[in-house]
Length: 114
Length: 113
Image (tube, rainbow over all chains, first blue to last red; front, side, top):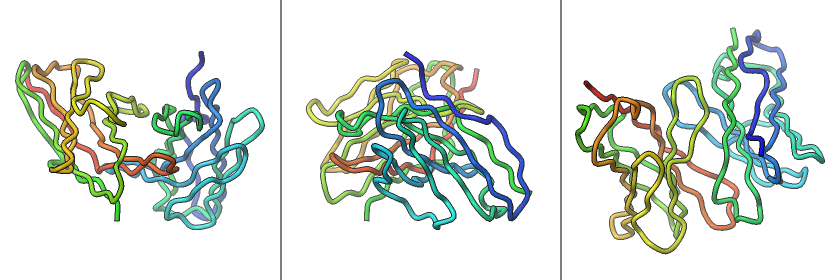
């Protein structure tokens, strides 16, 4: 059973650019959630995807968007990058049938916006 | 509004001493409660969780936590700290049928030799 993987590990972008982060869910999981973890803070919920549809969203602007693919892999897209977008981005997969009460986290992508 | 508060952004203990990390939550419905650990440059690893049933929950690496509804608390303990326990610990809350998990700000645990 493979765990949750994310790519790339690190990324440096310039303010105003766009970025795509990728996540492969744990085998058998049909739900993926994305979190932003700023330095020294806890993870903040961005959104969740279930069966390729957005299932819920946190307090993030529309320039944060996502996709979930039929194989349950996922992308997080951020447009018009701002300096405050610098953070560790975590994805977590879970199985909806287990009522979403346990999530498995990937190692994260460290995004730096300059 | 639902929230999670972790008391103490930094906790320092001596090796072999009791570890106590505090977590209080605010929720209008019975929550699911979690503790995660994060080592430097890594993702989150689940230590333990409470959903229903027994209020004293045992997790990995000798950690345990007790759900106290009357105090809206879910404090994490370990009888004897090891150097390898030094890390960041996050308390989190979710809800049955919900899509969102709310995390506390984290507590960094230091273990002194």
